[in-house]
Length: 181
Image (cartoon, rainbow, N blue to C red):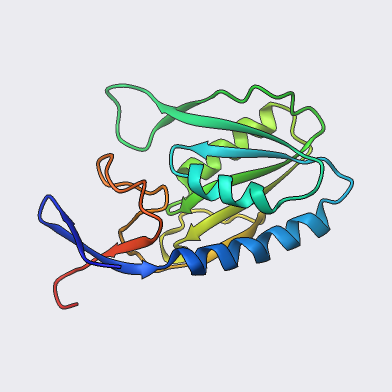
């Protein structure tokens, strides 16, 4: 892996695809055991989750369904104000749902997603995230059950995570190189 640059930002290798694949296999083993004979619905939050969810689902061998949602914000309002969930497309009434996220940062979008899925009738909601930044969380969650990697406040790209639309396609995860690194 090499240093990558854009808009005067530099990113260095952080988590390799091999590490990611190993962690996904372990998460999938847990999910396969816990949800055997329960037919959960995996709900991926776009755009960032697409690579993680694709690799995760390749390791899931239980009966399940999948859907994707996208969060929408009101135009002209403060960043972070989420208005709705677009695209559920599956009846969630009395279903067990596993939200698949790329990264949990402040928890704002996750909180909104959970509330929206509860309003859709989900019986139980679990969360599976590739990355989590515990020091950034602004809410307490008791349903974050699967986390690939806990990281600090790093600005990361790659493996579905982007910077202004760039770098989602990278296999590995990179973190920003800050002054003093």
